[in-house]
Image 1 (cartoon, protein in one colour):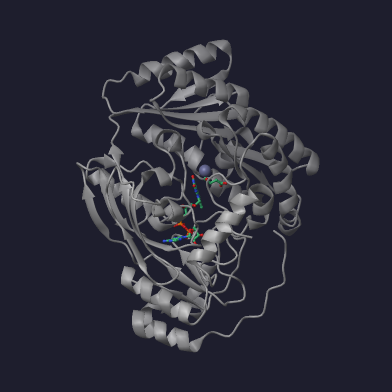
Image 2 (tube, helix red, strand yellow):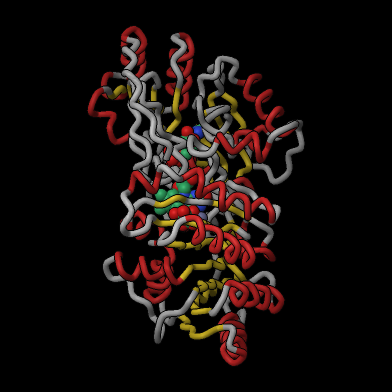
Length: 480
Ligand code: FAD
Ligand code: 2HG
Ligand code: ZN
């Protein structure tokens, strides 16, 4: 983190606060210390201050709050579960912005098991949306470790990826319809649940991934999938990222439709999990340089997944590419294996400050990414803890670096751009992206001109200017 002096607090717009209280009710407008929980991000990188946090209860109230803020020329930071990894939902330190929390929009508006659609409001957590789908006998095939807190609006605004992208795609692929409040206060009502609908520009896709800079998503229609009837999970110790990739391609060759998740973990990252997370232990004979979690699933009950898993692993154990493997025998064991993967972010947080590189490269180049970035980071900062993990099946690796044990947090974080640019140079050489799934947020807009300059950035700016000419929706995020 580049350190900046804390700017002086701007005086609040008392007329606006009074108008918001009158329209939304006293309890829906928080100020002072009541806003603290909304101003700090999950990583603890930003300590913003908000003029107020407003918590409207429905779409009309969101639209009215937007109109009032625009009348008063006060900027709005939309916020869902506040789990952003890039400071996307954090207000500026000068207290000039209003945080608009969607957390009271929690209605499941409808679910249809024949159409396989779920209509939900923005403040429904991803976990609650998954539960609603399950109760109707369907699957909402989007899964991230933060699903208990992340909300549908935030998940769509960031186009979240996660553990099942390899099979079902990112959040974008699941969105059939959307409802959103635009910066001019109008409500875009596109809650259609149609598989086919080619009527001009796909505005829902403009809003998905726009990180609160073009509109406030208030509800969406999501495409559900059939629930799998058979499921197998295995954890493997592997000698190298090359071996992890070879195992992935072998599973895909044998049955392209079977892979539901394919996750890579480094030995360093796994040691942090088993060392710092209560109850997390490795179900293998010993440790390995790297690990892979594979989940296979099928809509059929006797799909032969267990046989497939055992055959592929037996062959890999024999040729030495897999060093050790365990196949879960129960739901409890499946959950214990998944926990080793899902606790990576929390374990790294407990180990100290990290610099996160949420990068993607073509799947075939993941081993090269890991080798080259590891070498470059070790040369840049001796003692840095290199803990890459993530969605190998999508070519999306979280190339995370944890501070050297003896280095103070601030000294380490002051070099974050240097570290990100070191990893970025490798990613660029491999035709990758510096932002695979977490978004650009407040952390990375400085990288946009270099990576997406020319017509791409120019077009983004024109779209922003057309929809939000006053620049009041999440300023300082996404666009430099
Ligand atoms: P917030 O953090 O509140 O906001 C995120 C961005 O969206 C901000 O720019 C905000 O302004 C905007 N926004 C929020 N709500 C709305 C709305 N209703 N309308 C318009 N804009 C809005 N991400 C992944 O992609 N894959 C993962 O596997 C993954 N795992 C994670 C694990 C952990 C432990 C944590 C802490 C985060 C993880 N993330 C992951 C990142 C994050 O959880 C996701 O980006 C998530 O989608 C954000 O949802 P949220 O509701 O918390 O959004
Ligand atoms: C995950 O895949 C998330 O678990 C978080 O995207 C990654 O902590 C991270 O960098
Ligand atoms: Zn991820």
